Length: 329
Image (cartoon, rainbow, N blue to C red; front, side, top):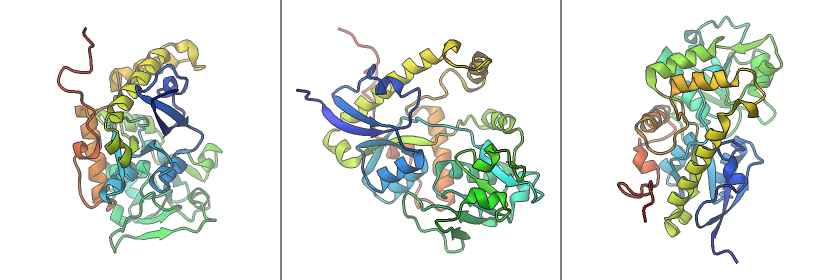
């Protein structure tokens, strides 16, 4: 009979997690039941609202709000999802929007204000392009993962259940939409919808060269009661995710496993710009800068009241100086 601690873990079905899913990597002292068959928004809601899982990949923005409101969750610095977000700002092509500044005073839809992708895009528009969030009339499709009280003068309309920001954009009821995913009208080639940045990749590369930030979307949350009762699980999980990522990245260097003609060229282009490990975990200097931007945006957008430090947000997974890296007999 196993004496390991049984834990449920909800994460996305990612290559960097696959070694944990197929059992080639195991978290020491833990028997994981891994759940992957849900979209991100559902997983975040079920973890932060329903508290259904012992640990879960969770929205960075949602975790900040949970921490700010004293909800019983902690996290470790495992960042399973990152994405540049310039390419997820969509416009109605009939509204004469040619540049970011043209969004000032417009009607913009979002899935939720607390969606981490939306948090980054609102921050980018304000800090990089001078588009103040206060100048926008916002329309949200769903409730936030964590209830927060927005400033009294914040212009927000909560849409009805039968309303979709994607449809409203195509039909001209909205001028723009900030979304975590490629919206359906855009994917379908609807001429009424386009990206704000036609060459979003070039814009994103310029942003990285300027800031050094490859935006963190998600963190790895843990129920606080478990982290307090079994403090060792933070290090065990951190080590397991590190090992799984190392194995996955080594495997993915082989262009034979991906059916893309110029896959290796894309890999080398990424490495040249973003470095050898753009998906690094832990509170490294680059990740601290990344998280500080996320925290700052969340605070100025009214989603959190206080600005925590990265060290306050994450459990300590250090094993001490010169310890936990090389095993010596």
